[in-house]
Image (cartoon, one colour):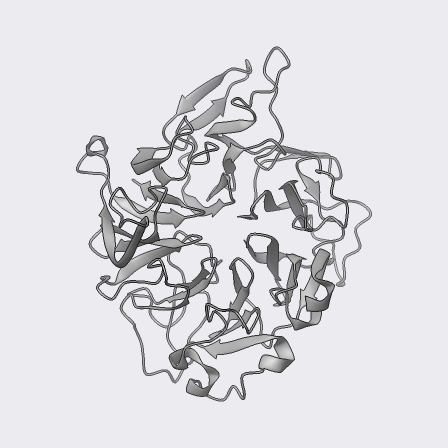
Length: 453
């Protein structure tokens, strides 16, 4: 499996070995440390695993694989890409003023469990930080909230980078934490984290009992009405939603929580881009037996989806509901920041819409063409970035649209750097060969990604 990237690269966040923006897909590079403390460079993932999540901050990128490995590239002046790795002479291996130009695996030493942590379950990124969830050996002083034998492991939330507004959930301290510091006493005893997402300055986690917690910026209602007055949640706080939560997506200053065919958009109802204005086709009035919208009670707009869908994604100022073809009626849970198409909810059993062939229902900001153009063919997979999106079409082509000033929508844009009202087809380099096939896409902060086999 190979990864190709294009777009903004001023801190080396594309992992292609230099710091220049590129507008055509360029192959990513991976560091492989050796026992002699030297490093070899590979163009493939060395453990034959697949990339399942691409999470992008303002100037760094994180890759989570099926094996649980996290690879990071980009700015690392504050440790947002993991601990600095010393070389044989004792100097830090990060070069170019703390920029990691090739993807490097994150490996932690967890003092609490006295273990090395190299396998993770979830990863997300704020503008300047990283949040990673791992299952680690349970500490001896842990209290489990249920009866019976203690589980051998517990979920821990490791954080990296900067936290000027509580983005890392570590309290009101503004000092940069040691990379891999854990959020204390979270998640609650006996519970696991099943989904995780981050916006520019807030993060939200879904727990195994359907509860939702968040931390970071709260003044726009992105952590629910009940936490808005605090303006900043320096530690995880509970977010009330009117259903069993299964997935979450975060915009710049709003949150979308979904589960079992329902969703709620938490944010400022005065948002100029209309993010909390759920389309009529998805409003609760169009659903069956869900009651009223509950805007005042939960601090957001509720909706329902009566067909099987692959996920709900969010840009900085938009929401995208994607129904992938061939899903059937039910599917497993999934994060909203996916690169593979999976259903995050079960459809209503009485729905008369078995399949919606790759349709996208999207709303929000569109002044730069961020919403799907009317002539976009049905996509099999969809990836949404800060102000642009990539779609893997049914015929294997990749389409890009939205704000593309850094080359993240390809070399052809209008005078304002946009691909608006239409889409660009992004071709792989000829060196990939005729057998190369795109199997996944990703999008970040003016960065774009193509996973190739």
